Length: 313
Image (cartoon, rainbow, N blue to C red; front, top):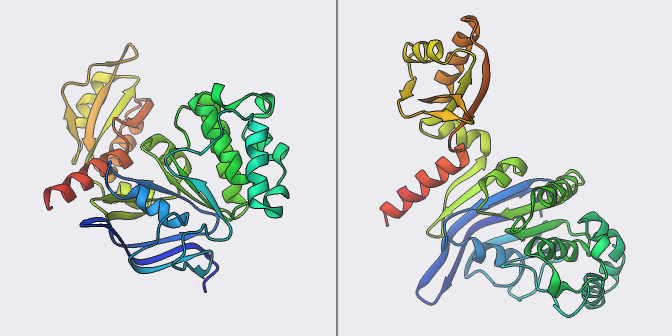
């Protein structure tokens, strides 16, 4: 058993009849790491999350969670909590009553965490005695996170936890997950929100048609990606355009237009060429006020890799 890893999967395959939901997946998640899971609808994300939560059993392969091999029974492995397809709540009960009911089912380990404590962690103390049926989607997601925290999990598995959250709520949830990881909890986070994954995750896995098309650090994904379009806002747009056109590896996109009322330049480049352009701009006395990808590296890689996988089916 290797207790450094929250998850070790080798050759995991799961079929439903003739449909291969996930096909020979290998995955490592170190303890204290937030790992993003992304893929188009039908890629196998929900199936993989279900295997981690004990809602399904793999047909082939080996899965270890928190250093222990996962057996053939449908039960959440010890130390694992989370939700798939949204948290299951009792609409007629209050937030506090929902957690009390779950704590009673889960026993002493859940009660030790403290209902008031987990409500405070997710920012629901003020509505603890309100019925869940009146909660917004974002509040239900936070209550689901509170329910998962009742057992003080060492592996947290979450499906679209930022659904319905306003900016303040998202910031709060991000803070909770970051603190959990800092304390050694492994987190698997499935989301269609690329900005959430880039803000939280040190590594990501991209699934397509049941297979992994990329798994590793975000920095590696950006380095391996093809050219990206970058939005460049400077103190002298005309001079910047001329300098960009004269820099090897830089392509100037003609339909740049304006960005929030300011003239903006869009350039297409790999990272090394972009670095060279920034150096030349600064040396030329041109201030760089903003430099950002038009489409994030994760989103660009997601589109490219999943489209390639679909093309070879």
